[in-house]
View (cartoon, one colour):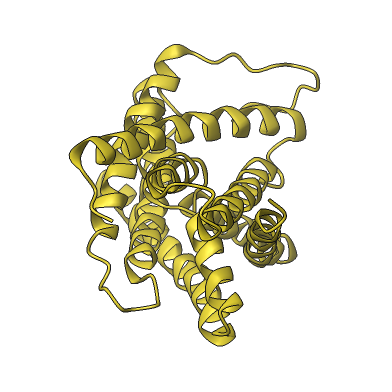
Length: 127
Length: 145
């Protein structure tokens, strides 16, 4: 679909909100569980993937207009989840000599997030 | 980095949240602009792949070169929040990576779907490592600062 300047700005601002949400959740979870394992980023990426899977499923069943998927999916959830921090955490753990934790972070997050997106997508078929 | 102090609830400063918001908005706008260049008729989301790999390299470089300059000052903290947590966090995305990988797999292109996911993670890790190397190298040349 064509992206109007208003929609472009809306998606971008939703991304800003998503980034603030990520910063808040990450800070709270890191304060609670420590930074030995990056639980904040893991929880953020799994939960964000689940919701995007759900929204994509709702769009497939015509239960969600496309501008909403763009604003909430591409904008809010795109800004909320992050690949660069997840990748940095993987390298940080590897450099600390914690190979198992590093591999678990890289591949656990990937397969966990794909599974979470699939569960969200399946959930949408129930509506 | 703050230590784990049990029930302590961190305080959020408005200026920190504003820096993350501005960076996140600009990062999302950049990702969106690049994703509009996705070639039609191509199943593989190459622009999201490019965004994630470039963002991984840039964050590796940024965080390494900031910490190589010594303990975190308030100016370095502001750069980390605006450019790192804000821009690079909003620029790169995991939800689109996971959902596209799932959709490709679900549509029957299992190899393409899982290859896209695994490929992004592996190339992204390599890009982060390269960024960290460049960030570390900078320290020796900028040591006089």
